[in-house]
Length: 206
Image 1 (cartoon, one colour):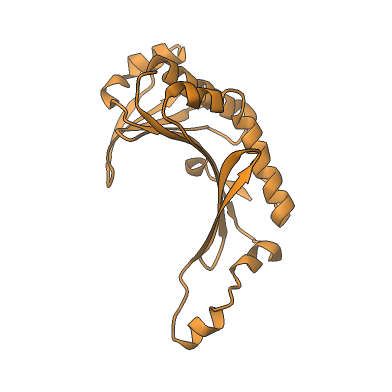
Image 2 (cartoon, rainbow, N blue to C red):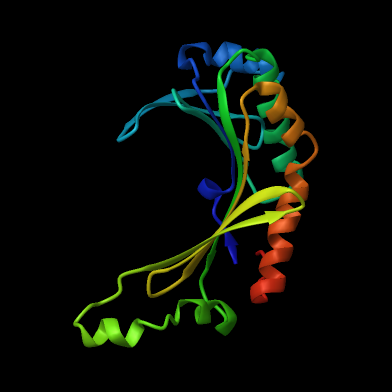
């Protein structure tokens, strides 16, 4: 299974003031030796402030509704870097209204094994075909509790590769709570996601 950078993220939902995230402020808060370049991206959800930071070009996206960080690679050291960056931002902006935390790991499975493909053989498949329906995609979403933490596990099939997404979710209402949930834990959650994929479907990360 192949990790997809845009789906391997730390997301802190809240009410964020984008104007604070100037390159000089980000460099100062994250302890960078130079100011990261700033790109403005206009999309369906409004304006995104995008900054690449660190020698390995980690990603920081800021919208009015969330701060999202993505690592440069699927490695513990890279996830440690974005974890420290998120904690640094939360400590500096501790009064920001917070709604929740998501730690996410997303994979594409180019050659799904039978154990994973079998999830999508649903009881009504033949009935849908007989009714003239063509299934474009099928998604199976489970809300699980593991060690007291919510895991939203999504498997999606669109006829070719499968997508497997692990969303470790925590409802939070302040920065201190999010910091406690992040500190030293992102690499642990990464390992948990990889182990679950192996135990459930016989998959290994590339």
